[in-house]
Length: 632
Image (cartoon, rainbow, N blue to C red; front, side, top):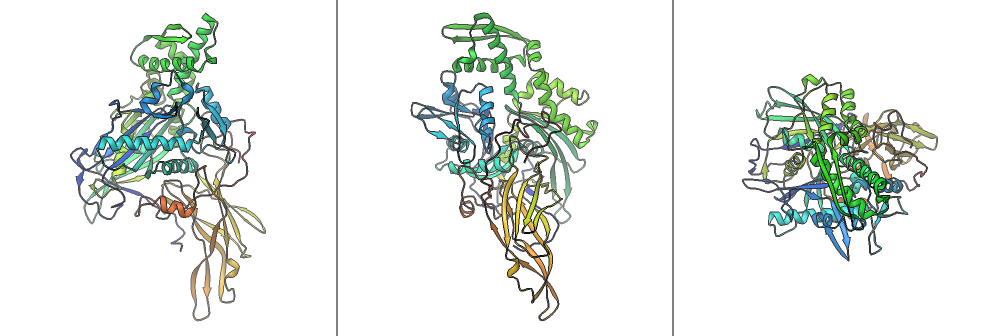
């Protein structure tokens, strides 16, 4: 591939959205992503606890929230195996208290994670009595069901995706299964997590249109019917999910095209911070432990030895947390918590807030970190929008307000549904059936990469980090190679910042060869090889064909670029369902235009075993390991 200059080839994601709130006109969009999918699309906000689904189709109400079999707008993110049958959503949740070992939740959080021991600790500490084992190939966790079969996180997630597609299809009254889906992901999802989710979608025969971060999706929903031409806005979106919290500063602005006089909205994610260790489930666990200790003190029975008892108690504590958001006290009742004994207790909001005080500090930390990093003037903020059900807890809101110097918090958006509704607009951009208000979204990739080049003469660590301010994007790297030796290029995470629970920094390796085959008598070659490192929104990382400059003297003086052979030597970011580059190209057709790279490359991964002597959970939260360096 011929290099088109040394500057960063940054690609913006262009969106066309309706000027009316939800009045999307059935018409051709033009060349931008036109005809990439059918008229009916789905958007998923698949959280650790519940999933929201939105349907996009032509008509007077083109964006609609999908309800499940119980006519609920939120569906539990759970899959169960019971007596040879697979159960999903409400049906799986319905048997969880009786058979907690059969109902699997938070499987999305295991995607791309190579430390099975850390995942086992996470499930055990949250009272999920699963039978887990380790995949001998890559060290990932495997879930064993009652039949003895073992499933990877990708396989269980694929089952869930297939189920959600069936819900959307039934709601849309479509004769064919809807398979074009946009998915909301946390801001801390790295390359391996994205590729694992892509593999899960392949299992379900789902075509992923694209990934979009929670705050970015909510920002699209916020901006769909607003005009920023007269003045720009800066808004902080704070999201408290079931298993994590994150904060993002997003800047809204607009400009008018001189040629068409059309107003274009810019949405720029200035920065995002996160804590991937703690979310609203931490409150449930604290309450559960508190009442388990009380029961043991009163009855002399340790409920922690019974998975069924702890599942019942944890379910009751989750409801208690929700009730205490609106009430100052509430009873806690569990029928037959142990054998035939009923559990009867009371708790006040004051006691609840005392139990979760430490967790609240950790949950609010991303907001504090964001304010320090961006140096944003709180007085100039247009709003501080709260997302996620956990943000309704009064103690969380109080702490957030204190971090903002007493500033009030805003709820212009539905915290539960804003992200999936924004993702629906994001999905609509891929169809030729809608003409939409035009927006540009700039969404940065949080984790810088670095390149290490080795030759027969030694190893060269390039000093500049590869920081993608937008996806998809491509960044150049230059390597001095005066001896024209073959090169081995290793792309890895920067050791200073890696995704949560990531211990191995290596991502992919390429062999650059063919330099010595160039006729040196005919060409006067320079000593610098230039290549591009590309990353797309689906997590496809690739090194494009490198070039070297040479002067052609045989007939006339002319400087030319000569392409050099590049060979990928290992499978970067592979998971248990890895495929070849040719299979990926066939199965995951990337849309043309500005949204996604047209030629996604399969990644590779080194086969060396990761160190199992790590004693800390690298990268889970800068709040918990501030000042520590991640080990390669």
